[in-house]
Length: 316
Image 1 (cartoon, one colour):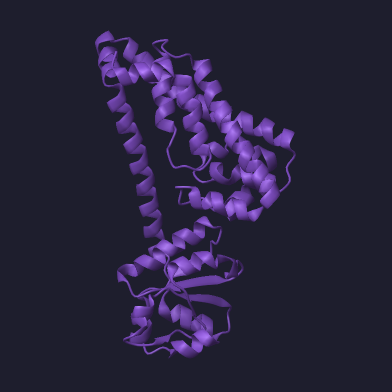
Image 2 (tube, rainbow, N blue to C red; image 1 turned 180 degrees about the vertical axis):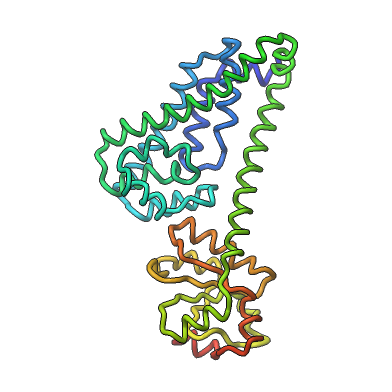
């Protein structure tokens, strides 16, 4: 048996517990490939199914309880922190709060299956003052459903391999490489999800004429100029009413962003890349009504739409 596999079999339950605990605390190391691998090893009785599930349950309950207590004590600030730690592009506070509003504690039963929801469900449960006993019962049931489904998937694969001893021996020999491939594949899948979200944000971008109409009609709109100060040198002007903030300053001052009106971001980079990335960041912070401006500052200027001096606008 390879040394790495022997080590995993010997300390498998502890590895599963610590790995799941670390992931649920917010570190982006997906535990699904690990649970699939552990489930496969249960077919050869090198690990026991009950032990794997119990380890995952304990690790997840510890992490969820920590976030629940923090959410109960510190409220929205902790929820925003968890969203920033999460890899999921869909980890949206408003979306998660919607699940709790419609389904209450039963949202915890399927939270681990939904990207983003499992990350922020525990602190939001604390924020809305859900009773800890009730939270613990529903959260434990949801964790059991999640880890059983993943581990049994690995067990099913292991049972198939048992019918071919040569294949099982080969898999055992290359178990570490297989786990590494699963891990990399899982990360790649999440990155593809993120890129797909960025593409969808770019597709939802706002046309300059739409923004001009909104401004002329007096519709409330929050405009953010994401350009770097050096970009102002060729033309020190900006859109009327725009707030000049670099991306890092926008994150620092996110509390100033209204949640009840359209948020428009613009820059000067190709394909509105910076605006799209910041739209993703704001989505993860629970701000859903945000759109990049197509063509950014250059297109607005080309169309001859109103511009104001950036110095006076910043002072205002």
